[in-house]
Length: 427
View 1 (cartoon, rainbow, N blue to C red):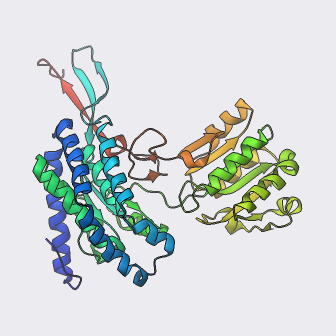
View 2 (view 1 turned 120 degrees about the horizontal axis):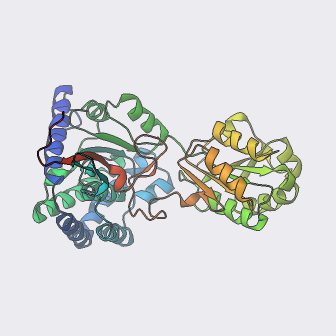
View 3 (view 1 turned 45 degrees about the vertical axis):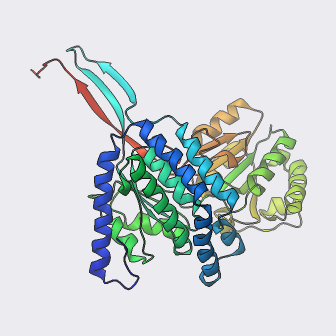
């Protein structure tokens, strides 16, 4: 059911309700679909993507032609573009998901009561996922795959800049679902770019189990403010690297440069560097040279600027910033305790790292830093579903309920208690 951009408020509301109802009906069927059938759909979809590359490229060309009119940067246009390599990568991702264990039906724990009742805690799907995302059309395929494999129906709401690409990709996935015997409404794309549609879906908590926004901070804050159902999210990624007094300084330099420079515009890139005062004199000039060689601007505290004269003055806003670009804030701290306080005050509870040779310091840092992932002697860039061995992920959460960190198959499930008896009644 398509809907025009100029549709009335009533027509748009009815459309969103219809999509949500069909998704809920599909989720009830999908919850009992066996793993073999879901894997067959993933494999058939991978084949279909490769077979339909020419069609996908034609649809993508329409989006690329319109991209300058949306004010997309060169980097955003590059993420939007679908090539033979990227489409093959999407297909391979589907094939890789078939190798992941299906969480549905797993007994998480169990016990037998003195009266003979057998209690099982069993993993079940969440139900219907409303997934809102921007720009990258490959996310359409990834999100659909991870939702269906975990037994959930998904309502996909991509950005207007990728509408033609997303529409065709969703059609391919729905067609292969019908072919294999999976409910086609398990994968639906919202085929209007009217921003009001998001608001309507966020009110449909009777049908939608969870909302997952993936994009800019303004989008995520809107979803968090308007949603009547739970939201899995993170607002930003102000990630830290702290170089402790006992750190191997060569290792610290390598980790800092990788954390910051491996990819600038991602949520797990380091935006802040903390250095213990006792190693700052030796470490800061060398790491500053390495970062500057990569085109990174340093914004530092007074102690940093004495050691690195080219560094600009850091403000309070700098210490809290997610730059998503070639800037890093730097602060010299007097102790591990000061570093931890700084991370918890200015960080975004996403990913923070300590470089240290002291096991006690590592343990204190990991215990006290309140983040979804805490790294010891490793780059912040490892906070990723694939790197954690989860396979595909639908996003990274900094919440504490119900999922935290990379959200893979298990994070898109809940559980129920199943109780087996032999006629017991409560006395």
